[in-house]
Image (cartoon, rainbow over all chains, first blue to last red; front, side, top):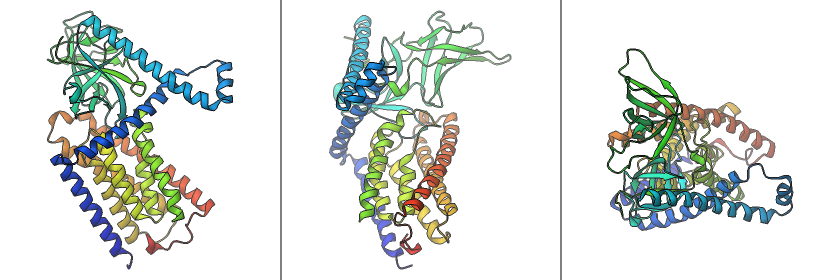
Length: 263
Length: 175
């Protein structure tokens, strides 16, 4: 095979490059380059999220708007971007009101990337330890809807594990019956389930489930979901409930990280 | 050279889609691993070097924003490309539709094995990262990717046959 030798060399060179990248990443030597690349990804990601978010708000436009959009393509692009920004501002305002009402501190951030591997459900935000974000802190949208927790932080970015991820678990309680406690976990990146609820507790459909506050960095009262179905099996120690997810992961744009320090 | 003028933009588009657009489809069924499929097809159509460079660059960028251990994507792309190329050289005797589709599927399966093998190995150091449901999700998404890979391989093969994109000029040893 006369062509094999150069390709073997090529694979060896690529292998060496990977080892160098892994080593420099582990030692932190690669940090400045990674930071620059992440900033680039952050800019492109924010633009695409903004565009998609704008596209969502454009659903069911009037006939006249549709005609105008067709006639003025450049204006449509600008319109979509502006709508995305307005949407982001509205979300931002909701979150700010909640933070002010609750007298807690929060750091607003924008999502610029999402999990590329289908087994995980997380997003990457454009604020990190430099802005005071720490691992374990809850992330909310709107009026206190908990979407996940910070799992890792770099200087300028942080990864948020969404509540729908299999690895996510949040100590929760029913808003109407504070004794009915359990743990809310994600199911296949698609929905939520509340487990470890004692059989003696009565849960009803449409009950709102909130964070219980027993986790040190997560305050009580953040909305996790509402009950869609209760699975009550005879002979089992615990019952479980399927929850309705109060957010659409693909629509997330602006989020607020709740800081564990109170003002 | 003219091939690369077409292939490089395709790889860049596949990378951008994989990084920004397709992850928005938050579902093991819909989540689309287009970069793996593109890399496999680029390699099978004769440009191993470009496929490898695309794998390392794309894998590096995906590793930067991934929650899996750093290097998972880079290593998975490289290993799956290397093994698929070896299988192609050693066992595949023709350039039939079956051969291309089988190799694309083998490549995708290898990528998933590497991805989750490495991911699980990394997760062993962090007990909270392991979930009983994770394995099931991995299998579901792996099977979905294989199915999508088959469809795309068939579509690309059909396009190649129609356009005649360098297909007839390559010999088996050029792979």
